[in-house]
Length: 141
Image (cartoon, rainbow, N blue to C red; front, side):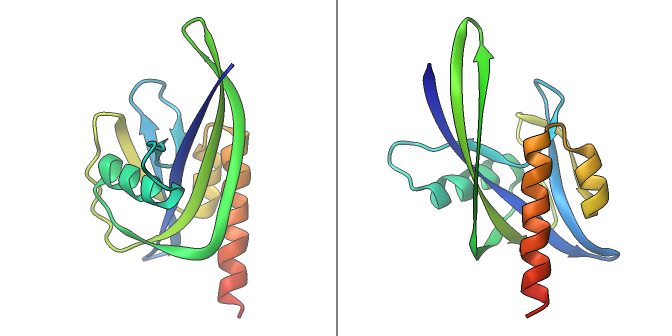
């Protein structure tokens, strides 16, 4: 089984009705998730996450220190099986104007509850829960 590493960012902003998260809809599979992509051999995780975010959305974020979560899963592409490790950071959007790449067909800024409902995979919902708890803890300091 081959292993792939990717890195991504859970992006949030302070919207008119409170905190909102950015979701992307895959053009190939139609699933909703967070921006992420492959870590290149010459990159560290955070650099890859920021590069992928910029390529997929055109936006910049401020990465919040202290949040780094890893999810692992397996999938099949063609006749080959893969093990995937995806590292996620949490980032506050510096702008809200999204410019989608060809990898995605739609985006959405949504509240925590709506984002959780829209996410296609349970491990992404758990990731969102951790991000929301982290942000709530930061606010209560």
